[in-house]
Length: 361
Image (cartoon, rainbow, N blue to C red; front, side, top):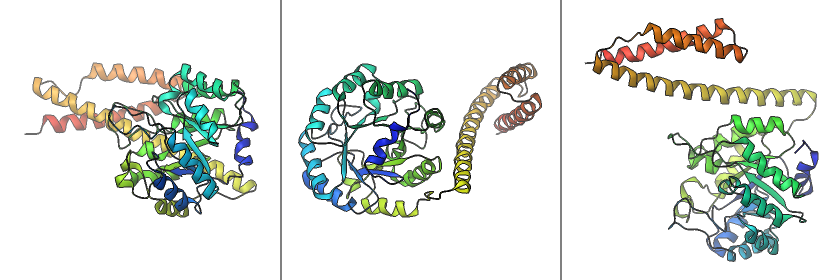
């Protein structure tokens, strides 16, 4: 798939401002609920109403959506408010039903993106239509798999395309429900700058208190839009209650978010340098996370050495590490002097951690 301006054509065709805001409940629960949320969003920055109709859950027994009945509620909300509507589709039958109910945008969920077979089935079902398709990142951080799903739709002559960054599963516990792994969508954006990129902060956060900060980071990284789960009574939502916000909160967020709207050469420079600086901030955060994990392992080594009465400094092991890091640094165009400074500091901090453990009573 080449960089093509036509990939952004649907944004212009819908007349959507920057950033595109998609909002609505995690799940359509009742007709009254869908219509109430739609009317609360009608005069906000949200131009697209979202709601899950079929909800694939990690474990059975949880609410799995109202099914096709909910499409009628979305269609009615569209008629009453003028908002565009979108929902997730996970097979050809979902596509057929969505088309019958005039759904404007179809999104492909993270669990679907991981299966080329299912993606191909959906792409075939959409062949010959003029619908917009947004592809969520796969559950695991795999850029090739994500782009491969987009390419399947493009090859099926579905040209109104975009991607949704909803974070990635990780075995390790972090502050996020799904770790953002910001570098991966940054790489995608650098390779395909004309492919619209939308953030789903709700699924990354898993809790409402950090949604705003995620939205701001996305806008600083020049994302094209946001998909935010909203519900008039989030705490009593039938699915993903903790990560939904009220429509009034979303409206306040959009007032408080810093959105670049300047034009001209000076503004273009400012936008680009702000984006690059945000990328630096993201990478610096990752460095701190990695260093914290390294020191946790150093603590475990210190505890083990204390039990077995082993000296903290192991010179042979340290020299082996340093030699390997210098060689790897050269491959990344990092000077030997720089590698020595960094790893001596890291090694000293590790020693400090181990000595504190060994000398503790």
